[in-house]
Image (cartoon, rainbow, N blue to C red):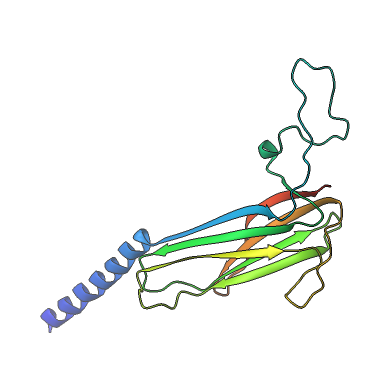
Length: 177
């Protein structure tokens, strides 16, 4: 009887230890890339350091340092979602949601994608999905209008299975001519 109990204990400890090791090795890599597609805006030019002139419209001299995304009114905002999950066999359903809000908090563009890893190779799940956002487009049936000039906020959230969404990226979005 003691041998059976010892055997059961060893099996339980082994299974728990194996699952803990897999949890330590399990990777969920998710990369978000934001870009403008279509007509490119005319960005303000930085003045040379020795020049006494200044940018009169208050636009940043080096937009890449501020992390802002600049769009023209006819452009689409494209968010590329790249995922690489390793060491399965269970990968949670992941819901990616992208929203653009104006300064009053109203959603002016939104899209989403659900990552479902139901493939034959249970140890790895990877892929890429591009989400194109246009002004006032909440789904494929909405009318797509030109972006209105102004400043917006881009927010990308991730939710595993039925858990609460977590903000994984926020960026300012500026629409200029």
